[in-house]
Image 1 (cartoon, rainbow, N blue to C red):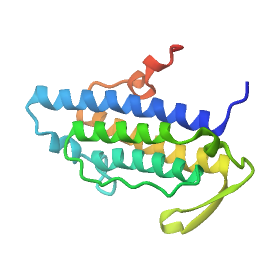
Image 2 (image 1 turned 90 degrees about the horizontal axis):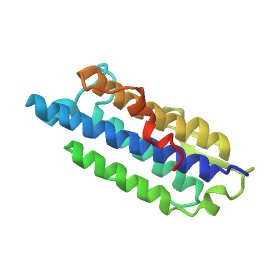
Image 3 (image 1 turned 60 degrees about the vertical axis):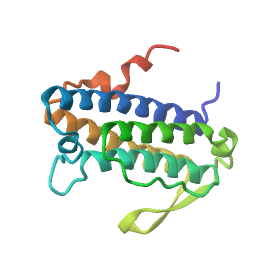
Length: 174
């Protein structure tokens, strides 16, 4: 069996989106049980110079959808950053998941030896081989922001564990 870039990307990102959906649901329940306005949790940061929870989730979807859109030869899709509730963030992740699964696997796997040039913030444009772009930029950034979102909610006191972050229910063969 050959593992393709589309297999790696879609399965990993699907697991991340499902895990974050569970994590966000637990965050919402925790806030509700304590009578805390969701905005307090959504605006929480681990450090003053880090993005709040809402932005972490937005970046998970942005890196995923934009990254795979580039790989599929499509213009990167942008979503409005207007979420103000846990439910809205969960819907954003669901839309990102749908967008990724709607991409043609053949387009994601096309030109395996090719490169992708993309904007990398203050660094400027970078060009990477497609596999490295997926692993070292798209998935690395997605996992960083997903883990940061998890850590923000853990820091607040939401009862989360490693199984929540890994999407443990998905580790069983489906």
